[in-house]
Image (cartoon, rainbow, N blue to C red):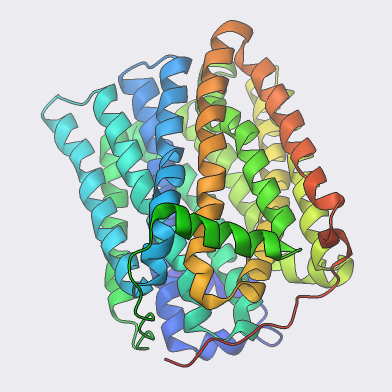
Length: 432
C-alpha cells in the first residue's frame, strides 16, 4: 500500500524543484509510515461515529460527547507530554504510540463479536486512541526537524501533506464502503493493522537520533511556561497560536454534528458520505502541492491567512446544503474541496514556519502547548455544539460555527504575520 501511495505522490510532487528528500532514505521510511497510518486513521475517524449512529443509534448529544472525548486528549496530553517529548528520543515515542493505538482499536471488533459493544466503550476507545494520536503528533512535529535539514522542511511538510490528502481521498470512501459492507467494527480493525505497519516502517529508520540533553522531569506548569514564553516571544508564532486556540471552539460544532447532519438531515448513506469527504481529499492534494507556490506568490504570512480565511468561508457550503440528494452532495463536495485545499495550504506553510523559528530543544513543549490550546476549545465546542443542536437544529449550529471559524483568522490579520514575506532563515539542529 505504501509503495503505491508514494508512487501516486511522485506524480504530483515536483522532484526537480523540491527533490532533495527523494534521495533521503530515512525520510522516505518516515513518509511511508505516515502514509499507511494516515490512510487507516480516516477509517477510524469515520468508523467510530458511524458505529455510534448506525449500531447504537446515538442522538446528537451523545455524538457531541463522543467528539469531545476524541479531541479532549489534546488538552490532557498537551499538558503532560511536552517535557517528556523534549527529553526523550522521539522515534521511540512514535513507535510506541502506533502500537498502543492498534491495541486500543482492536478492542472494538472483539467487543462487537462478543455482542458487548456500547457507547461507553466507544467513549473510552475515542479518548484513549485520541490521546495516543496526540502524543504521536507532538513527537512527530519535533522529530522531523532532527531527521532532515531545516532548509528541507517546506518540502518535507509538503510531501507529508500530500500523503494526508491522498489518505483523505481514499480513506473516507473506503470507510463508508467497509462500514456498509462489513460493519464499522471490522473497518476499525483494518485501521489497527495499519498502525502496526507504520510502527514497522519507523523501526527501520537508520539515523541515530541525538540523545536529548540530560534533564530532570520538570513540573507541568514549568513545561507549559517554557512553551508559552517561546510562543509569545516569537512574533510570527504568536498569532498562529491565537488562531489555533480560537478556531477549534467553532470547529468542534462540525466534528460533533457532521456525521449526524449528513445522514439524518441530508439523508446520505455512509458510502455517499464517504464519497463527499473523499472529494475533500482531492482538494487537500491540490492544497498541499500548491502551498509553496502560494507562499512564494503572496508571501508566507499572507498565504497562511488568506488560505485560512477562505477555508473558513467555504464551510458555509455545508450549512446551505439542501434539496435532492445530488444537490446536497454537490454542496458538501464544494465545501470539502475548497475547504480542505485551502486549509492544507495554510497548514503546510504554518507548520513549516513554526518548525523553522522554534528552537529544536523546546519543539516538543511548543507543539504540546499548541495541542493543549486547541484541545480545550475543541472539547467545549463539541459539547456545546451537540447540546445546542438538540434545541436549535444542526444546520443553525453549523452556521454559527462557520461564522466563528472565519472570525478567528482576524488574530493574524492584525499582527506582524501579515507582513512576513519569506520563511525566516532557520537554525540547523546539532548533528546526531
